[in-house]
Length: 218
Image (cartoon, rainbow, N blue to C red; front, side, top):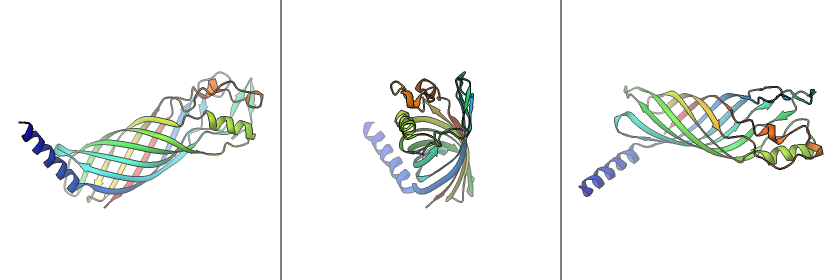
């Protein structure tokens, strides 16, 4: 019996590898974030983000497929206006966007209709911040504090739907949600960064949005 299962497993793996497709993917998105602090404005501006990378599509039986992706993803909230102790901080003061190397593992299920294949998918992801965009209108000390406080490790998930067309093109739409805070507890805030309290930054934990991705598979 064990030999039979081994033979079946090898056969399935061979079929997957034989039908696997490597592709390039790229897309755009938009995000929203809420801070919910009394002395900061509650809503941070959404940002227009983008992503680009490589994908591998592995077909499975019964309409399933696995699609891992390695992306470079620009994302994060932008605070156009904030208040501190009742006083508004200058507009466009803080830019929290980061460039993240991100690994997605998508699990798809769809119906093969020969020329096209509609599908639904769930996609957990994990990422690591490789660069932080420069914050606007900050001193060097404040900018260094923001960059040090950013969590390097990010993780979350997305759900969505898509369409494979002619076995080479793919269009998908996803709603994504970051789990965990975008910032960490980074010690006490000194005088030069008194208007950027870590306790408030760590509350930015409900970041999410929508993204559209176009892929081409060889």
